[in-house]
Length: 254
Ligand SMILES: [Zn+2]
Image (cartoon, rainbow, N blue to C red):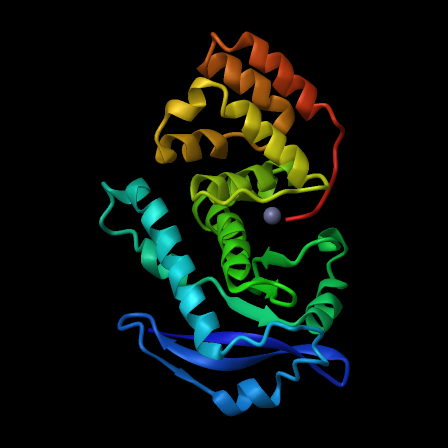
């Protein structure tokens, strides 16, 4: 199976995707269309000082998918027919400079403050402007959290509030040791919820059990009830969670 990786570029002011690499997902060998990469990637016009070589982006993509695969693999220990590997590799990946990314993002009012987003149609789209390569990888991990929530928890994913959608993605990044700072909700609220959960017996569970527990919750307002039924000794923390989830509803951002 071959997979293409894309650049998001502006063509007469319109953001379009251009394939810059083709990857054999079985052998992990890849070919780079260097002409497309350099021709369509005018670094100053795209508003970026991060002049990555295409191989750096490809290697970072491969590393992120490997990390995600290793994390989620235990969920399918008893199911040899499910190809998690193919699922992860099926998620689209597009890198853009801030000019193209911001233009594309303007079509999604709900992701107005983000540097990356996941959509069912496009997969992961992320700005790499003013980011280190490690930060690009961290952003990918967050969006893969959304992607795996979509691919593995399809029904609940479509019903999740924006806060609970972010809980799933931030839970994945925190499990992998990434500790991002979030200023705005729903991300900030999601982070607070996870901080509360970390003080409960939830923190003692394996990743697979934690993931499946969180999957059941589509609305943060139900979280306290879930916690009290699953962890009845956590009453003081339930009060805190009640407080955190009562910040008010927000919408849209993933
Ligand atoms: Zn998110």
